[in-house]
Image 1 (cartoon, rainbow, N blue to C red):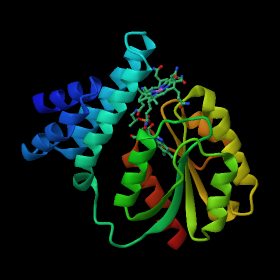
Image 2 (cartoon, rainbow, N blue to C red):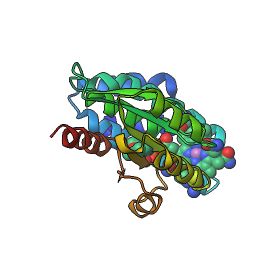
Image 3 (cartoon, helix red, strand yellow):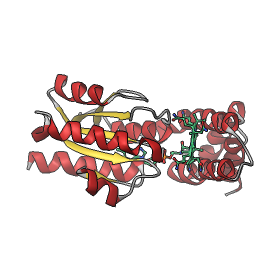
Image 4 (cartoon, rainbow, N blue to C red):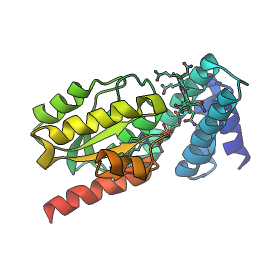
Length: 215
Ligand code: B12
């Protein structure tokens, strides 16, 4: 547990240079990679968010914490990734217009790849039209994943989902939404097929979508 605490402390204080080494040490000690991710890094980002909300830290500190987490995830990635030699399907993922948060979106993309999906990552601040055209241009895309981390960008998520629902790719895609402010209720309200709270369950739901298409 203490190594996980060390990882958490390093992420919270934005110590990019040492996070990777600490994660590697935790792996060498035999700690569960999912626990290192959840308790050492994701929980650390929640603490960072709380401190920001309470004006104890500001945007630059959030940014360095985010960078540190990315370094840790790089080391963890091979240990979280499963056997993805066989493609189970293709999906598009992105963070909505006006929103620059990508850690959660990247984790979802990573878990999807681990589950065997080919991932087209549109990045952050993705305009509505880009989600639609990516789904249109790639005829084998069956899932579109939309991420939003700000309450102020939830309307952009709604617009994105609406544009996908109104487009002619609607019949061949499932729409998944997520991000800290998103709830099942909001997902239902905007017409998304699925919402999950975390990246691991997102991959499970995505797999269930493709297996139900095949069956
Ligand atoms: C790091 C961070 C930043 C970094 C982002 C760096 C980066 N490359 O991502 C920087 C410094 C850039 C930043 C900027 C801002 N931020 Co900020 N940020 C955060 C922080 C601390 C962590 C976010 C994070 O990475 N969490 C860890 C990941 C793993 O969790 P996650 O993103 O929720 O993802 C998980 C799930 O939600 C889910 N998921 C995510 N996406 C998807 C998609 C699908 C399809 C599915 C199924 C699931 C899913 O799976 C993920 C993994 O399990 C949060 C605090 C928080 N508690 O969220 C604030 C927070 C989101 N930020 C906030 C704010 C206010 C801002 C700024 C407006 C600050 C400012 N004044 O400038 C700007 C906005 C910039 C912009 N236009 O986007 C607020 C939002 C408040 C609100 N109600 O809207 C928060 C909540 C902080 C707070 N408590 O006040 N931020």
